[in-house]
Image 1 (tube, rainbow, N blue to C red):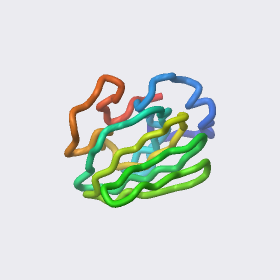
Image 2: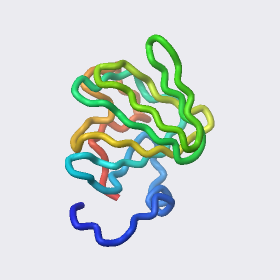
Image 3: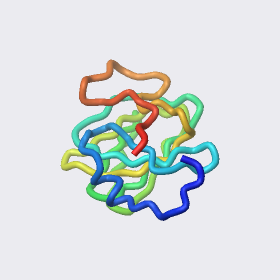
Length: 127
């Protein structure tokens, strides 16, 4: 992952896989993964105890349910879920997103509800 000497096309990266809720690691910045994912439907309620989670919507719309409110993100919008905050991402019509998380962060968090088959419990897959 280190030593990338050419630009990385996010369009090409997203076109290289079809799986939903299964992020790919595009590059690493210091100790943080830059991940892209395709999403549709619902993820799960989960919490990252030790890290914030940054979302950027590249295409489509993403909804992030929090216990006290719901945040709707459109193309170009960003939102950071603070560490320790229970949240549940979803996208009715589908979306492509970019996330920034410390390397090794599990997509289902440290505390979570049961994980359905359509959600990949991963630390990210290499492109």
